[in-house]
Length: 234
Image: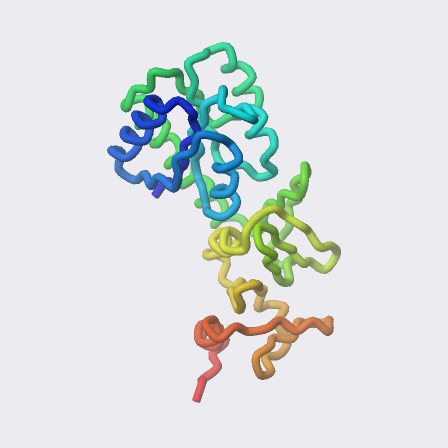
């Protein structure tokens, strides 16, 4: 399922785009907005795969909006002006659609997004590392170097032996990216741990190896954790 939002202050264009997207199988519209600031709240609070954005929108234009995001979803510029196409592709924009939008053209973009996201997921499943985006840098970090992850609202701290990364990414999104990495498990609303570094379960905490860190275990996560560890709960 492709989760998308639209950003356009032209009423008729916005309504047609939303209507056409609603007719395409495998698309879920998470929000319809007239400006970037309202759209940003949804991008930060939900998992958004695709943003359909006009370039000429109020307060901050579409290109500046894209540039302002540290970890942007896939962006599709939808505009009546072809002059921005070169700049869009230089920014590695996912796609560029000219108005008036044709539903067949939208379907091509959605199919392209499905293929890209499926390929990305398959690649993640086959590799043994995570690409961590911190500010304007990207770090390749092996899964077996990550001890645990702590969520903090729209951000997260990724703890490794050598460094703590501070990333603009919600814990639930990191959890989803680690679903196919068996040693990682959510143990609390604010924590994901690598069980390879778990030393001891005591009461409602997990002590991590080689540290004094004790990670809390949330009640709703306890059964799944104990099942994975092979602990029988009386």
